[in-house]
Amino acid sequence: MLFVAFEGYNSIRETVLGLLSNAHRLGHLGLDYVVRRSTLSEANARRSPEVFARVYHDTYQRYSGILADSSLSRQDMKRLYFMDSTTIPLFKNILKGVGRNPDNGKKKGGIKAHTNIRSEDNQPCFIRYTEAARHDHLLMKEVNLPEDSILCFDKGYVDYAQYEVFTRKRIWYVTRLKDNALYQAREEFDIPDDADSGVLKDEQIELSMVRTRLKSIFAGALLTGIPPMDACSSSSPIIWNFRQK
Image (cartoon, rainbow, N blue to C red):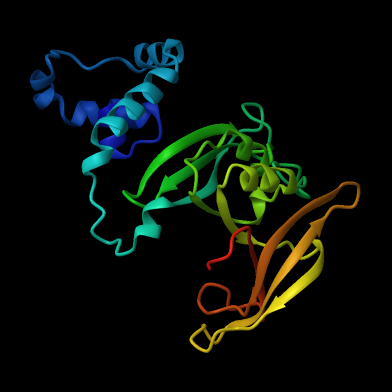
């Protein structure tokens, strides 16, 4: 499996062909033959993915303290985390697909990888795999971060109830506000002279839902899109639950 990861192979066929092309080097691994594709497939099917999860986390815990962080210049960056997901296409009979059914009826399934990366060493500290049809925000409940951490994520992870949980645990978040979000402005703040020219407004808001009203108050700012990050829109509302004194 290390060979597969190092070479970037995506299938058992590629793995076997790669082993064949390096057959003269297999002796260094104590092997005197190339494993058949069927044997490799059966062994891989019987092996629990927890084996690889434990190997990764053990390795990460052992070396996380010495991973490079020379690109960071402020203490705050050492408590910064990034959460995102990516979908790996598969056949729909393996895992349920996501989104609307296409006109041709050939909807693909997929597996979604949810990853939380610690900015200090630029390494994943949380990885979960789900079917692509499972909504991103359901994974937020599994995120466990130290107090005073800062978590950045996109609109796919929007979950007002989880926002309140983060606030109670003193976990700070930064994300974008959905276009259809309901909120009420409570207080507007002056924009500092040295603020970025893209900042249009800085105000404290109260978010609410159609069926459930949340009493927690969150700070928010309205930012114009700064190319190339968001060149298509004129403004990008950003919300967070903390304010620098």
